[in-house]
Length: 203
Image 1: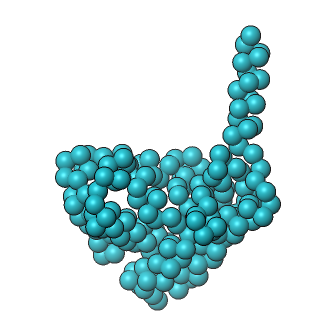
Image 2 (image 1 turned 90 degrees about the vertical axis):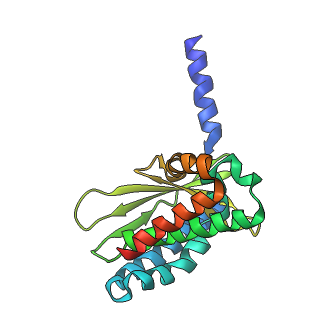
């Protein structure tokens, strides 16, 4: 019985994570490669651009690579759907600003780093998982994986980032935001998102 159960579990895992069609895999991995190309170009000009310059240069790349409305809804939780459109837009704008500021702050210069995108994309339900590594000039590579979902226009967009290969950025954000949402609703979270962006932009 135990052996049968083990075989069923393995069959379930194999069905849940499979290889996607080559064309779709190429599109999702290509979207990450394009984002990394833009990030590296900005890093190489980082000191000259300054924080605000990096923010402005990275904004189009973040908009192209990330499904920011979907990510905001996931990070906020079920209450997002009940907010009026104006509050939803304010939350998305705040989340977008925080996301761009985070990249502009954390990748401010180039020191010989490389980004490696694994072309062997994994299918997870209707989503895809693109595995990558940030390889510093000195030190151990860092795993950065991206959950991708196909948008209405057919493009593949990031809906979550897994640091160290498995730690969900959105799960962490949702945990951080839950108390703010519970006590102050959308206005309080919009204020917090912009405060986080402001603090990074001042650094």
